[in-house]
Image (tube, rainbow, N blue to C red; front, top):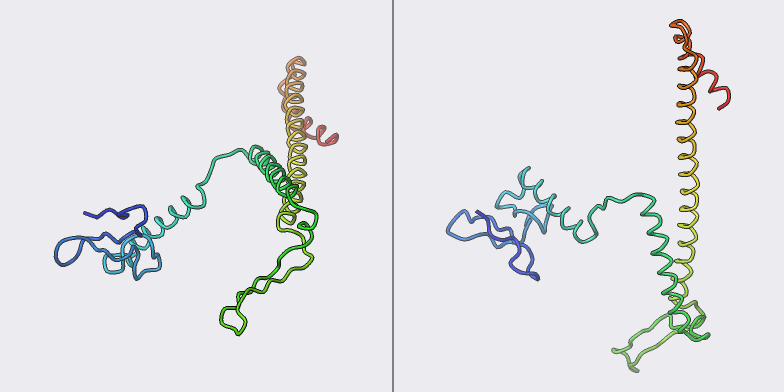
Length: 206
């Protein structure tokens, strides 16, 4: 029997293994004394065994997925188009931020701030110089990324259409050949030559 791993939304997970002596459950941090700290049982309650390590690693992976995002089943074309739209939104938002800046703010800004509290003359030293504003840098980066994903999307669309066209043409060719051979009412000997003659002729025009 195990205790609840998380006692609250802000409480770090505990081992929760049943104590070897006395009643209650282990309150040591999950994974204490193991290489999977933060998940699973502690070293004293089987966390270092093969099964304990495996369980701890699985729990850590689940936590990482919950934080950074679980796998999503998505069509590559939809993912690519989604990135185009998302990046276009970033560019538009950054443009609005830049439009709110003055011309001086675009090319002149603070680059360093030093607090001098333990000196003879305490205060704050600020260094400013001609540098592009952070919003402008991000705007330029997102614009470049937008151009890149648009190129990729266009190329992917063209290649997809080419593949689809080739597949359609291939299917049509197969149906035409089948119809021709059916209409000719070939003999058994002639039908035996089809497997050799037809592919060879098609390769000549490929």
